[in-house]
Length: 103
Image 1 (tube, helix red, strand yellow):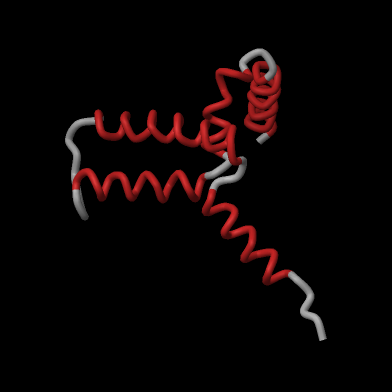
Image 2 (spheres, rainbow, N blue to C red):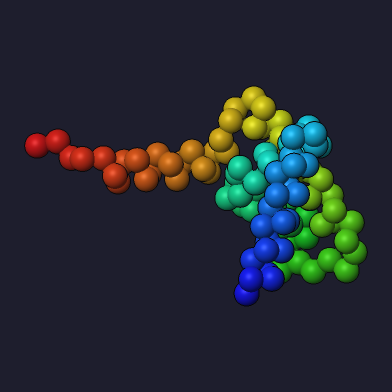
């Protein structure tokens, strides 16, 4: 347990050390990670639109194209609009449910 915990700490420290110099390289991954619900929904929708419901692709080209497309689109969206549209929707719903009702 101590060995795996120490290894985990070493990996986290390495990631933190590399995050500064590689900030611009990692920006698309950060943008994609900031809107997972939107990215997942767009990914499923694109697969259904390309191959139809229950599609099976034997080539990895479709998966690579959707991955690169999502990296580009989420990076641009994050630069110009901030949070993803589905994340905003969920946030508004959560804020409305957490609000104290007026009497």
